[in-house]
Image (cartoon, rainbow, N blue to C red; front, side, top):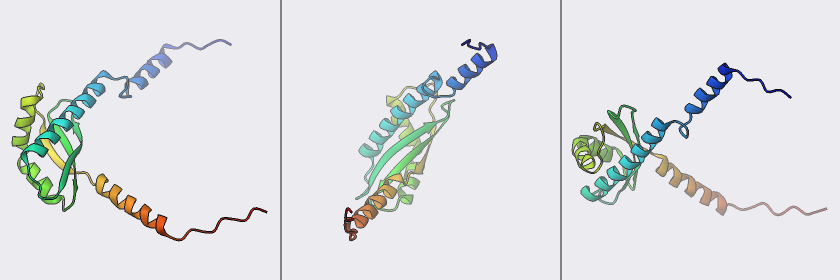
Length: 144
């Protein structure tokens, strides 16, 4: 069986593979930058802020390719998230400067904090599953 070789098909496959983050070096770099910023912003938030009974974690960071802006996804358990997010957005300049003392990038992204409700939704889902597990179960079917 003869294989069909075409430069058009080859260039299409190469461009398709470059769209995946595994193969594209810029995407891998952005993934590493996002993860590094997530860890460092989380450290600053844990060390420099008191949340009075709330658990505040950084669940993810998304910076733009030019490293000018970044969204910081923040989870809040144990209370209302809006005052926490407001405080973080008011203090974003201070947080940026503390993070950038430890992370050296070409430009410092402007951080915008947003609420990530996936953790609280997960807690609600686990509670619902526990309630369903407590419900009476159907008797096993008799094998005939």
